[in-house]
Image (cartoon, rainbow, N blue to C red; front, side, top):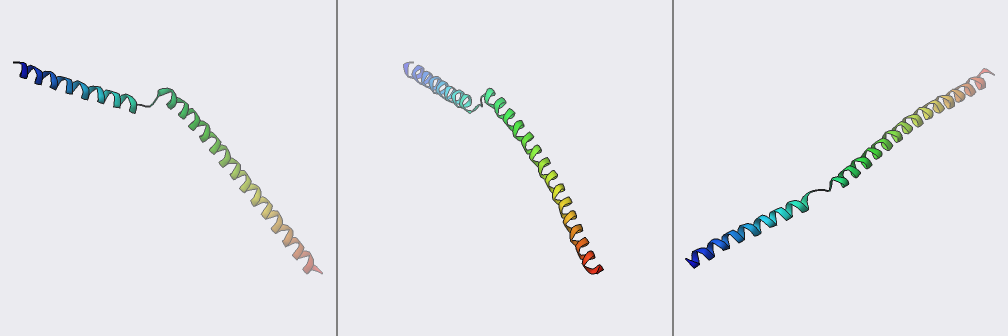
Length: 85
C-alpha cells in the first residue's frame, strides 16, 4: 500500500510541477498591456509623422516641377531673343 501511495503522490507532484511550469511560462510570455498601449500610441505618432513627411515631399516635388518649368521657359525665351536678331 505504501508503494502505491508513494507512486500516486509522485505522479500528482510531477503533474503539479508541470502545471506550475506551464503557468509560469504562460505568464512570462504575455505582453504587458500598458506596454502595448504605449507602443500603439508611439506607432500612431510615427504614422502621422510619415504622412506629414510624405506631404512635404509631394509639395517639394511640385515646387521643383514649377522651378523646372520656369528655368526651361527662361532658357527658351533667351534662345528666342538670341535668334530674333
